[in-house]
Length: 225
Image (cartoon, rainbow, N blue to C red):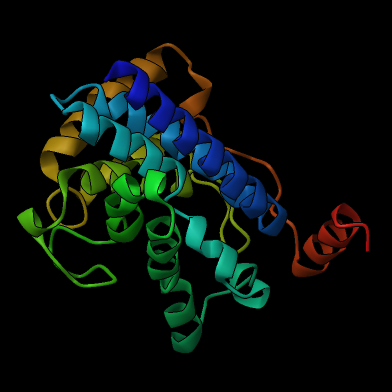
């Protein structure tokens, strides 16, 4: 049984690495973000009594949570300004695209929930389905906090990074509306320990986000065009 599980886990990570590699060609930022969210979600998950299946689904789903962005147009993904209503609709579709991608591969299917639901909110104002409270899978709630914190403390094409302190305050501010309170409590405990230890995982990610033109040029060079 253990041998079968280890083989399944090996297959998963082989497939996940291939997808992340493809995503990195599309968007180098999203790849770095995905690995950081994976690390944060994994450490938060260890603070709860998750089953082995839920632990695996959380970690795999956190790693692949943004895989659907591989299908988002560059002019939307890299727009250096606020998105229009239509553009935001396109951007929001990345969770459906991601869910469709992982659903096509047997070893990735267990990771569906964090991929599909990491933009849902406790108050029901999230997407894609606008579900609320207990309707949202718990492992997706963990992924939401990890994703949101890293996104806030990373330079984006449309917004500079916030400080780790500002990111932490923002997570606390939205406890009970955007985020699950019990997950926020665990995150706060985790964050303060990492902050005291000066761990790089909570420090602002200051890598400059490329312009659309720079991204197209680097991608063309990568592909040998």
